[in-house]
Image 1 (cartoon, rainbow, N blue to C red):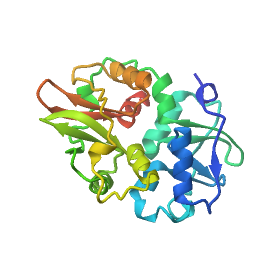
Image 2: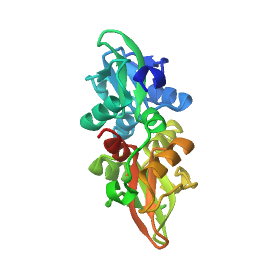
Image 3: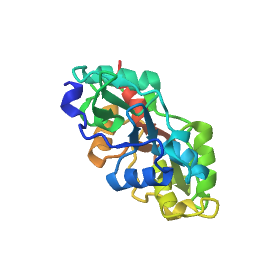
Length: 239
């Protein structure tokens, strides 16, 4: 399967002088995590949340100016290799001058089957970010920045009772909440999908694709053992 078969041709763009708050509103409204900025930059929901104190500034202050392109006739494994090697969540489809579409980690998770006999425990992150429900969103952002992650597991009695993502925190910003006074419990996702260490990687990939999620806590019956993100699965798919 080729990039052109799964890419989204509808690329939403903004100008450099777009307010960060307005860019966030566009992302949440369209259920996306990134915007192309005038064909020479990109701003993500992680950029916005990590820089939440600049919410009234313009996107050019926080955007990444180095767009990563891929040809529409490249195969999906090549796309997996690039996002893994560059540590990025999307690729712009085009030749460097013309933008024809965009392909994201989520697209690759949906369409790239894990044809290997490996298990979640082989690739999971054994040191995930784990927090309590009364942690403030401002504190979570600082913890996320330290680990450079987009998700945290909310633990209750040693097991996951929620997950908080940069998108969830973005919704709090959009609601004009003060992150220093707002607790995780008000914005976390309570419906937690999880996997076990002896589950096949393909089982985890299929669950992510079915539920349209990019993160899974890894547990046994007693405790949290780790986490699994799109990034870890794509690293395997790129081999």
